[in-house]
Length: 411
Ligand code: NAD
Ligand code: SAH
Image: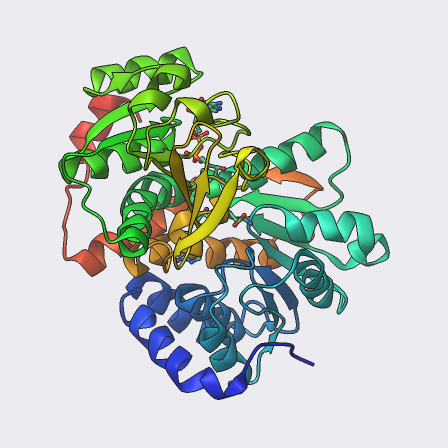
């Protein structure tokens, strides 16, 4: 029995889902195939992904494929109650509400695992972790699953190395059609969307500090520069640091960047990137935000402890008065600013990420007898077919190798 905030919000959620679906043409074409083939017929799917409109449309596409869906969010602050209501009014089982406490969040995870899923769609590893620790007796029924994000994959790889991963998990984030677009262009845009709608301040002329120059960091830095900010990058990887330098950014250690930044964005997957040693160095009015997986990149717990006073400056902005008299601001409790303070990545981006998810779910169903426990790379054919469909929907044509070129290249 579903557990959500308010079913009467369904009409607003329905509009959001329709708008998103109309801008996700690759997923629409997969939906057409799924309606005919019913590749997930008779299978139970547990899904934990940021519960907003694009995710809801993925859930519906999986349902069209024949799946029985059990849905929850992947972050208590990114769940949109109207979207959850729309899914429930369409007959889906949903367990999530905005602002769930850690205990309620875990109870919702358990609610989607308890029916005994055959396929798991995870975003950060909470379902896989819950399955192994709290529902080991149901693992036998799991054919496999898909992981959406970088940090979730690191957790899966560690489990696989230790021989603890008990079913196959496909590394969706590592597919080209996912991280090249979602992490870079998706995060690049949605982080600034989240920061701007939350603060209503100008980015042009600001000194922005981006921590981590991976796929997400590259996008966040690129878009900050595009809006007229001066950008500093902090890194721990010497190669990425050179890349940032060659891309024209200033590269500094955090101990120096902390003194200069007006707006900070962490996207590392690491912890304590901006921590107690940095807080006293920050300028009065500095704004801290995080777009990496956990709320530990900006050490919010240490900031709360150090502050002599705290106040709500504006919705989703908390002010902290430090012992040196300066005030610094933390956005969205230090959780992913693009999702906890916005709608996450744009629909055209999630079109590709969720196309990978949908095709991987079908791959698991089709290859159920061959797949072994452990991590599985997304087959290149899935990437290629999604890229070709995306190009088609964008009206872009490309060349094909001639026989002569194939011979010349020796392919
Ligand atoms: P990535 O591995 O490509 O990049 C991470 C970078 O951070 C690396 O270059 C690494 O060297 C650097 N780094 C690590 N520790 C650091 C530290 N202490 N200081 C400075 N730099 C450090 O990963 P990615 O795909 O860019 O993902 C980054 C994080 O963002 C992950 O946690 C991922 O799950 C999350 N993510 C968030 C969103 C979103 O919508 N907000 C989208 C995709 C991924
Ligand atoms: N449980 C984590 C989730 C990781 S978030 C947490 O603490 O919140 C990172 C993932 O969110 C990315 O891999 C990206 O694909 C996904 N994402 C970004 N925008 C999204 C959106 N609009 N809808 C659903 N997922 C989104």
